[in-house]
Image 1 (cartoon, rainbow, N blue to C red):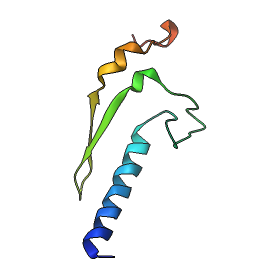
Image 2 (image 1 turned 180 degrees about the vertical axis):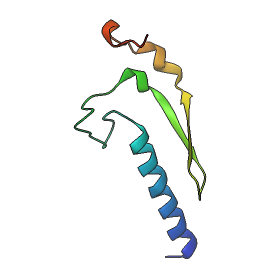
Image 3 (image 1 turned 180 degrees about the horizontal axis):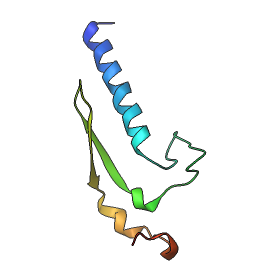
Length: 76
């Protein structure tokens, strides 16, 4: 394995780990006992960037309006 490949794999792992910590719901292979289900309020993309310091921001998803949030769970 080349050193660039190893560095790239390490960075991808750090981005995956950071994104998993930022999302407070179970999604895909990530299953959290504290958050057992999908959360419609978190229907957005997490955009990560950076190597030394990882930055994170969200981006809306076009189909997010199709998901219904139960009235009792809506933010005020």
